[in-house]
Amino acid sequence: MATLSAQPSLQKALEQLPGVVRELDGNGFYAALIEWVCGFLAVDSVSVIAYAQDRPPTLLFEALTERERTLFFARFMDGTYVASPSYRGVIDNAPPGVYLWSALMPDNFRQSALYKSYYQPSQIEDLAYVFCVPAPGVHIQLGLGRHAPNPAFSSGDLASLYALETLILELVNKHYHLSGRHVAPDAVALSRHVNQRVKEVLDNFGEGVLTEREKDIAKLIISGYSSQAAADKLCISPGTERVHRAKVYAKLNLRSNSELFSLFLRHLTALSG
Image (cartoon, rainbow, N blue to C red):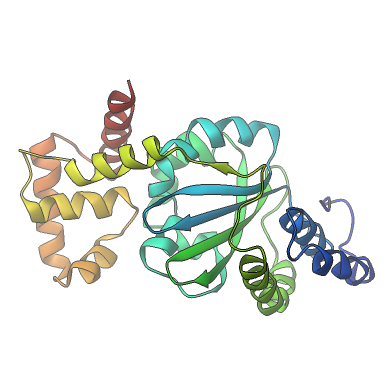
């Protein structure tokens, strides 16, 4: 992986491209792809996660910092991924392409419980994603991170990533189909138990206390939707959404999105016990 002290080398990246092509139908594809991308773009951490309908997420590749790795498996992959900005791409069936962390963040995300419990202690300064959709219902997300004290991605960094966008998407799509959709032996699948637990908590959150519409609102809040985005999703006005949101807070004796997410995490923990 490229380091921030070295300028990304175009020549090196071009020299490594045949190595990516050779691994198109092999288990070393994502390692080769990431090494190639880092010839253009210096990063501190990388994750490649596959999401598919009715199947638990699978970690296809990771090169995380030591600090982030511990939190990643203890928090993110244990259910809190449903509230991450990148997971909105799965929920919204986002088209393939490059997405910036700042653009994916819901309102006040940096004040959220998830940010304070995962992103902040991981010292994540910035993230950029490549969303790939190699087949209907299948989402593969390449997450590229910068960690403090290193700076966020510059406009030049992002220009390099945008320049690679089409080629990365084509390579991932080709690998998906050539590999017979098999995952590498070292891929880490989130257990179906956790996946079912997350779905169960979301589906039953506020059961017996909230109305069906209020439960819908609560699920969207937990998943990171702003008032406007939630209103659009449910085809209601923002004013109506805010009324429902206020009722959710009042009935659950909460004051903020952060407290709502914390309650969701407590329910996850209780169900796993």
